[in-house]
Length: 322
Image 1 (cartoon, helix red, strand yellow):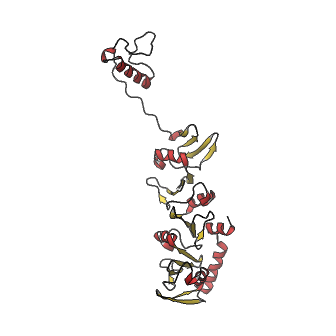
Image 2: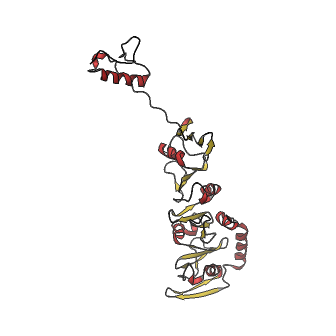
Image 3: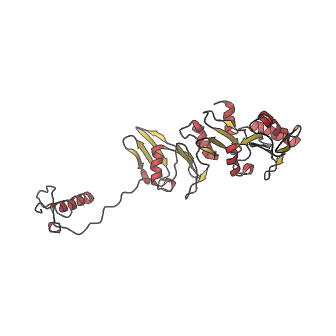
């Protein structure tokens, strides 16, 4: 991965942002240069840093098309400016500079509250992912990733940090297939990915989970099970893999599959209550008596009803019956 793409992903443009902010404080919103564009949609002015980004993307003949508005003030975070175009927008703020956002990524960003939502202003224009499958924009507090198969999904905070530490979309997890969501009962957050999930809670932090271990955890009730939230990522053990949870662990081996260990392990059900004593006269056939005898031995470990009358016992019940 190139240094520029890595920097764009993580949004660590601290020096550039500080410089842009200082210039903005001295000069105000960049307005030194302006162009006027006319089309059937109308005549609109594009200026300053937004004009610079627009021209870098090809102007009216580029991927944004013609302008649909003059430069406008962003409605909540009023330090920002934007122009809308045929196929997207360019947003500017003193701290982030001017960056285009468009298509499905723009739609997801808009659904989350635009620049005043959880993601903030864009930090990059739309870029291609290094694996060639997708597209993304980095924002002040997260990212939106898109592929044809997964759509445009936001990922942010500790969940994004965990995903990044594993290799982003090139990791085992793949691309996100949901936005960040709340866990339904216990307080927590999660994103689903193509091949797993990342779960976060205040007590446990963010941890990935996938494969057979995730399937076993899901079958027990996810974070609402007695295991609770994961407290580690999956790790190697002799002959297999394992993952720790708030109460116990799940260990997987090729031979044994995924087995719950520790305090989260399911409690085996108690044996059925002992029924009234039986004797051979209570059965019409030896097969009926034998079935009762076998069930008793299975539940209690011995022939508590004494249906095997042989001495020593031969394992056959009520031989005298037809």
